[in-house]
Amino acid sequence: IRGSVLYCLVKEKCFSPPHWWFLDMAIQKKGLWLFSSVPDDDSHLYPYERNLRTIIDFSILRNIRVVLTTQPHSLQPNIRFGSHIPHMTQCNKILRKLGRDYGDKIVFVDLDKLMTGKMEPVFIDVGHMKSDGIQFKARVIGEAILSDFKNRTKPSPEKTAVPS
Image (cartoon, rainbow, N blue to C red):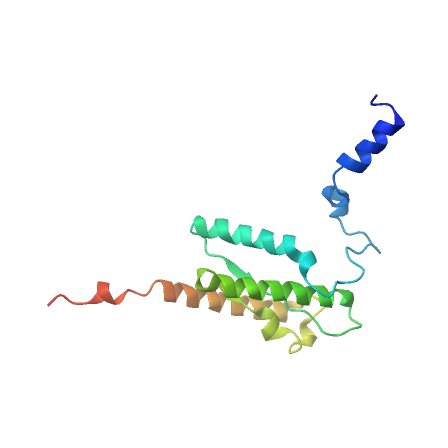
């Protein structure tokens, strides 16, 4: 029965893994885009949000401090990979939502707000940067981590009170 055309057809249509399951779909090939147009709503990014929430939740349970950042990008329409701008905007919207939802449980840095549209000369393509852009990101993220560390390690008032 496994050799019959009917069996093979049913197996292929009903029980085969989705096309994205295989490694060759994870490798970007020249001329192959993962998306040709971005839907207006961000419902197609539910797996992205769910996966980030899972990573953050497990990290918090293990006392691992999460640093979450948005992705800054160029706004030049003619820049290489410029068609990704709407998708990056939607991803940043989700990242900001996660930053609000988790609050002080994570370190959130909105690099998109700081850089997008304000630092165009640092971009090589829509999302990759020259060294001065990378240095700026590193400085801002480092300052956020240090600030968070200082705030979390301040002695509490009840421990510093002098007994009378």
